[in-house]
Image (cartoon, rainbow, N blue to C red):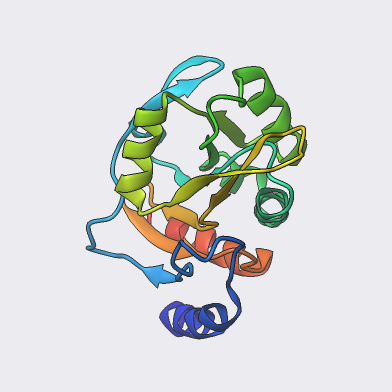
Length: 197
């Protein structure tokens, strides 16, 4: 039943999912069981070193973005937050959202903490050096590029892919959910991974 749901979701989202930079491929919804994307990594949070391995036993929702993102990040995190708000307290204890900043020049730990806490308490903001972030992005197939903004106080924006990566309690990347995946579908995917154990 859930596999049929994913196939339908893939068909719907492959038509509707787009983002602002045409240099990056369109996001895809995939069940990645057994595929090679993903893996453990270590970056930094305001609380110190953060390792994905610390979250074994939890479903992880991983997203790459930045705090000054005008639309993609806020809308994606709002949908993620809506899904998290539908979980029971018991389920919520087994789920963690992770927001990786691809703009380490501007996204301080304080900025990240303030940003993610606006959306949901089960979100943590992490970052690292430019090379560390690039290595993690490569692991997950995420893409981003800095774009100069003429006559703007921000100086530049970061166009980035807008996939939410769902990682199983065993640390395996299982699903890619593209931008604007409805919260009800995110919720179903979370519960599917929780039920798998």
